[in-house]
Length: 87
Image 1 (tube, one colour):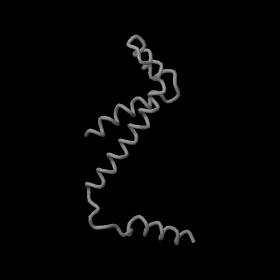
Image 2: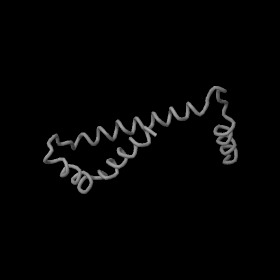
Image 3: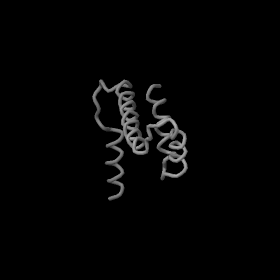
Image 4: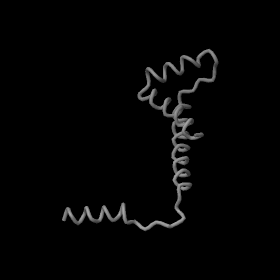
């Protein structure tokens, strides 16, 4: 039974029929779409803590990185996602 499952899994991933016009351009397009969605989601999460004053800009970043749950991860994911998106 387990061997039958493995054969089906192998056939799904390696013998799956795909169209011949599926090229690397599609792959880069999907990758760009994933980075765009990451930018939108992390941007919305970062905007929850946004403070629109110049005096509090540094304190906002410091609070986000040090005091919020996974704030550092969201900030760096957003920053590096922008670089990868334009790469």
